[in-house]
Length: 259
Image 1 (cartoon, helix red, strand yellow):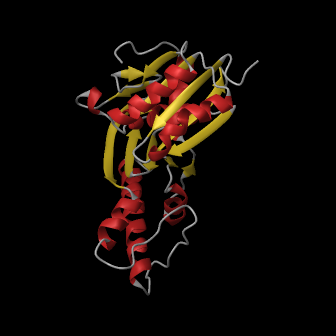
Image 2 (cartoon, one colour; image 1 turned 180 degrees about the vertical axis):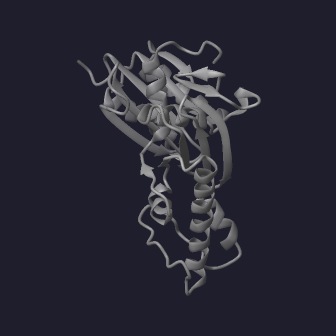
């Protein structure tokens, strides 16, 4: 059997990277056979990457917040590598996979945030939750124990925030998962910028948790390894919460016919 036969493919096309994961049809949430990620500038290698992996998924569910060009590149790769797959572009709808979308206009909720809420509920059903997804932007959202998405907040991500402060200096902080955490009261401009931005990110998350009655927090995204340690409240660090939500949506059955 090839690497793709009897499998489902989920794709999270974000503002910086495109991530994908392959799971056996019906496998539990997050039990991947293969995973991959690439920067948007490398999408011309996606066909070769998927061919080498032998992907032949029966179903594909993709969330895209990166615009039409990225979607077109992914569609082109799917036409070559998975021509027989049932492909759905995930969208925010009034209700799906146990989450009721509380946005005034449900379609305006970012599909990545909707998917992240589904993923969080799949990991921690029956609980009030705060979901912090810390990528290019940081989103902090709240869901109730009975599955209502009640709303959230959006702020610049850690890299964007620090870059805005340092743009006119010679000490632009280079932030990645290996960046050393600075002292709270830093003794140089580089670390002071990073310390302030980390405090702002953590403060937004902690404010949301307090506003949601001290609900448990799930934190995800590329900047989560930096932000989680400075939180003064517990948070469960989970990789790829959007892809987990897409997988949970597939397991829930059906396909959104509005996409």
